[in-house]
Length: 413
Image (cartoon, rainbow, N blue to C red; front, side):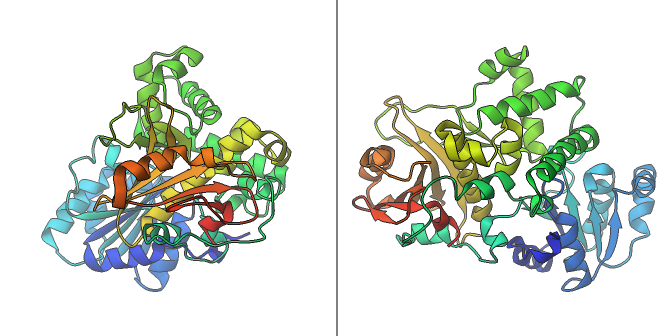
């Protein structure tokens, strides 16, 4: 299935940013559709010359003479995979300082270019950064999700008659959101994910870090996958891999810079109880996660522990993607205290309003599933807007003041 068929929600934000800023950088992992989206924009709404640094000769020329390379550019330009020639960014900075015209550069990067040593201080205030993640379910179903905004408004999705159980969700979970994974057979997906990891480690790793033992990065990704959604313990992972905690911490940051994993920080607020201070780490795509841990459709349908890991990771990362286009800025955290009260995802607006999301692979939500969110609701008062348990059952069910159980499809329906 071609990725050109998918309408990307971030497109509107890219176009707005090009009218507001001198340069825009669209960052994200390989194979999420950055090049396709930028090519469409450069051919339609924002006409621009296209330059791909994935071409070795072009990248070599850019690295050899970045000033001359940029000097030869007239008019708007889209430069793909800018991390392959980070030397260009200082030349772009000089161009932007001399010319205040909006929309001059549309850049893409398959690594977080802000983390590159040569880039950190290169473009403050000159570039607007946006992220393109793998496809959301809304993008796959051609629906613009408003789940987060609705929960902050106190409106819980009312669904009835949804398919019951994990088996119906399993194909969606093992496919994930990478455009190239859509429509493939299980063997085809496995080939894609295998080559995908190899290409990122082999091609993009050198752009973000100098790693002496590349195998340790691959091993770490596999271990993180087995613990996706769990509390991050750099010491524990290090013990499993025979590495020290500082190495695990720095390598995890590298995987984040390559958009393969994402950490949710703990939500800190004084609720009168001691809180866990560890982050939670997720593999960013459920299809990639399933491949890494060997979770096929049958295992997700039949094994509750596997299903819980994959489903929580899926929901957390869907929320992360949707948060990019909410009406008001939203940050994602997790909550857990010493009394083992927890909320898988806490969403907080800048005004302090809060929404809680808990994920259960069961089709029968229970009152005790809401323990963490009841705690937040009772402590936060009016700041707490909604608490939802996403489950694999058929219907939306009320569970008290501002609390409800909602089928997983409520995320995008």
